Image (cartoon, helix red, strand yellow):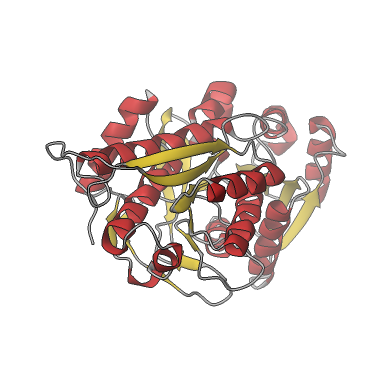
Length: 370
């Protein structure tokens, strides 16, 4: 199975094949990530319809705003299932995606999760859910390898309370401990930025990881650390990818450079990725993030599955994950069962540790690949 390429538009008619899309479009969701995710989803739908849709029927995206609210997402899944969507796509926030995945599993609704990385996306093994992004244990383990390789074995984390941040802290602690490293936890709810800097000095950590929301409290913490002469040699990192999007650079300028983060792109895009990158750039008015590519690849995969196996039988759709072999923007997408992961997983999604170049903050430097 291969991805559609730009072709002379073909006629599509008949009732649409609907795909429900879960996207954070309003606060407190990370709306910039949501905008990129939606751009990728919409571009892929447009191209799929230009190539003839699904067996001559048009694809239609039915979008619901999750606003980073798990309960709102659960209600959206119920609504979309009642509307008769063939499958669900999307979501960026891991905790929200987990709620949506559990509900989709309960309803028997195929869900291809675009961007959330939490390992425990469901409470039990399920045939209904598949995922494109790498599990958190893999990506954050690669981040820990980078830190150790750069000489950082005593790491502080500014961590807000959530299942996602707690899981990330545990992954980092376990990975570092195996190599003689340690993790010191700092609570940004209890410590204003200046006090957090004092605690960071006291901890003797050589790196601080921001396991916290953007722009608050991440941006004030970065500014405070950058301005504290005692912390001049401290590395600031953001594994969840906050520096990827333009809003980070707009708020922080030079202070936002040299902050390593994870993104899920190969070092060099192939022909499909290059073409999609240009098309997404036109839609977004700027460089697309990895989240936009994830959105495109999600619909790309679902469209091919629905073309090959039909759109009327949800169980048949969910039963097709193991047979997927679709050329995506970042490599060939295949799903398999991975130990410790209860959903169908694309195992080989590329993982990079990158940062913004201090000499040119609009340019990214690849520091480490996994």
